Amino acid sequence: MTAPCYFKDMAQRLSELALRSDVRFYDERLRLQSESNDPREQLVMTMAAGLPTGADDAEWRAISRAVLSAGFELDQRTDVQGIYHRQVDLYTDPLTAGAARSVFRLQYPARDIAMTLMSMEDYFGYRIVARDPELSRATALRLMRQYAELATGVSLPDKS
Image: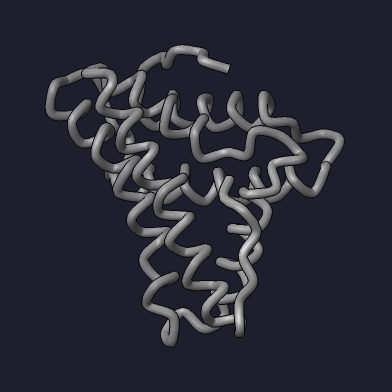
């Protein structure tokens, strides 16, 4: 993580955190996906890289707080508006590719599955950093993988 920065206003802080979000949750996951040609592995890597590393993941917490606070004014925050949908695309791509190659037997449209996984990631991530005693990172990954297996019709590797 970079050295602490001080911002003149909340809008500047939100813009900076939106950029950091793109690096950690988009660019880094795109790089991870490129390391494998197996859409099953790509899907699991995407899930794992989107969740906080644990309850003390300060960067995940700061980014999610900023995005959440801007979330009530998405029509005015184009820098934040697209974060969710860009990350949904990270799920949609391996789902679509896997279906095209007959690796997946999608039970629902790829974008629907992707939006559900992304929503699970966001909410489970929040519960992890909020220190929910019944929802650890490993539990979140297991639940996401189980849903993805139902939605894709195949077993996925356990990379927890």
